[in-house]
Image 1 (cartoon, rainbow, N blue to C red):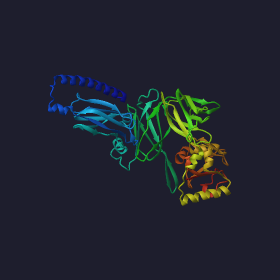
Image 2 (spheres, rainbow, N blue to C red):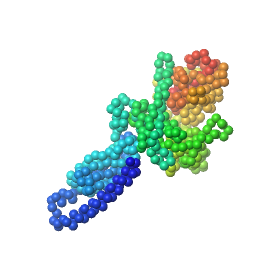
Image 3 (cartoon, rainbow, N blue to C red):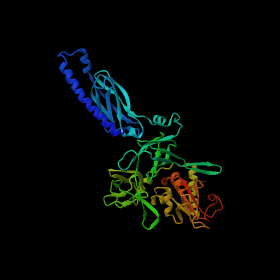
Image 4 (cartoon, rainbow, N blue to C red):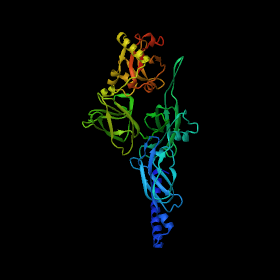
Length: 484
């Protein structure tokens, strides 16, 4: 039964209980004598039951939980409900002596696939009784969902629920996909794998994906027929448990004017917001707002923007402004979504807060980078050069480097390509911290190195490559990355 329907039924029952209690107490009062007995005095004693609802997954109080307290010995005697405040706290006054069951409802429980969690409470006299409630810890949830093998050394678990973007109803039968990159280094070089886990949502839209790596970054999406979400990044914490809601929506595909090879997704969704600076909260005019592979717009003089043809569902939003560090985040484009607020920091403020912990190996790598920069014929990019380009992901850096391209190969993977000696475009060798990474796609590169982790990039065209960065006698160049 959906949460809203369960709560509606619960409140209906409580209203009936209250009316019955009032009738019962009135009848008892008319029948009692003027001198109360010792048993009547005990029954008239009451206490306060209070506590806090805690979200153990997010490690914070849980606001908006509907807490219910119902008599366990005689259901017709007592039953109340109250909503936890912004700090997760709740309290019930004038609770008669007796045994009770206390529990709570919250959408968080539905998304975790849990039934309402209850516990026993005993009120023995006048005073206050504390009874805290909580969502189970990540370790307990992982064991309950994935089995007893989910110990400290086991893989992580990703859970959540999928809803239709139009109406927000649970979406059953949806395929949920998670992917990540695994790179293994051996004597023969680097071996690349892209493992995948899939799950199908239940009738209530709930899904779980067990034994995924953590901590780390994974790519997540949901699909059903022609409807799908964007592929979004999910950060799995060290606790090994992560929850993510997804919204599935339809999208129309149209060709981009002037480019028959590219398309974009549009729809009837609406998304709006404002862009301001982090330093002084000043509105940013003319900032670019874009749904990845979708519509785009720019902010006005007040920093405000609106997209009226956005594809509904979970999408990726990009925000850029000249001189500011770009922002990229997942957004849920659904009915009645509140305006967004995006704050951008200047490059200077971001670079000023960067701290590099250098080891001797890193020092030697950067010394070699500077020496080749002074004496070689290649092109060299420093962190400042990269920041000016405002890349969201590492592969975007090469869109503005002459002689480099991002092309899709025969196997449908996007790769960094370069002009070669014997062919118009070829695949350069890629080195990361001196290690040859054979067969790395642009997606692999983006997942392995983030732009703000780069200490330097060396770009060599064919005929310019130093011997240590040339794996064979091919007619293509090399890209060499050094990380902080």
